[in-house]
Image (cartoon, rainbow, N blue to C red; front, side):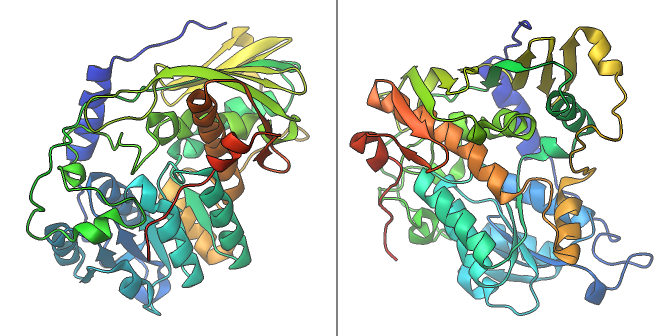
Length: 415
């Protein structure tokens, strides 16, 4: 087994803070200057959630050729700043923006509790969607999202950008083509969640529609949630934590390389620390073991960002930074015509824009998004139940376990 690479929480915070703080530069070419297609020939895009992550992803869509026309955010200063930048319109209520006939697709980059609700509303309004991870805060809403996307025949791109990396695709193709033999073990490692965050009530800042910010999440006094402050949305009322929020990346690569939903029932058990002080109360330091009915074993741990497939004839390990294998000769294999070839994407945002035009699913489709997100949720539920649970991936329900099954859904605040 490969040596696990660990990243300290301080290093992870520093990297992520740098990514959020980096300015999103919108060039004149991206906005439709000479040499680019006319606006009438381009995919029009809108942004729901104008914070740091939303700004970065939306900038990527624009850079890939999307024509920005509108934005929506509960924070007035954020939406107004973006509207001025793109010379478009700002909306306090995303539903008004979705009512535009000239809008083709939206980027959803809001808090976790909002993701599916925004995606479903967009799909019903006839818009295609780029949705940041995790997909949702509960299994039930994942299934609803998938149903709506397919029923309304919308294009859906999940924010698991590693699928647009050549080495990630190649590694999964090696596994699916049988070059490591029969898969026997799986290892998934994702950055850990963190404690902290003050729960002290504060005045709602001027310019924030706090009720809209909360959306479907339970009402709680404002205590600085929407300003970030290193909290990482690790409040269970609004999120599920990095077990899904970052786990989505290596779990997505797992699903791309191996069909977890075709392995028979899963036996899942795990432990974790759940903070009792401060605002953040999602699982930390989780240690989850999954045994699939076909005998394959999976370990899901916090640490770096890594997916390893271990077979009878070698292993392949994939991270966003590169790919490793044993024997190393695996990485010199040139795939044959009759080997498994996965969809190619060189630009995640551009891949969605192409799907909008062709009506062919983008690389991170809704089915795989649901499959990977379910692994996170089943793991979280097993931890919170404090015992082994059994998941049926075909019926998509827990087997003979009323308590675990109740935890597949959350109450949603009206409307």
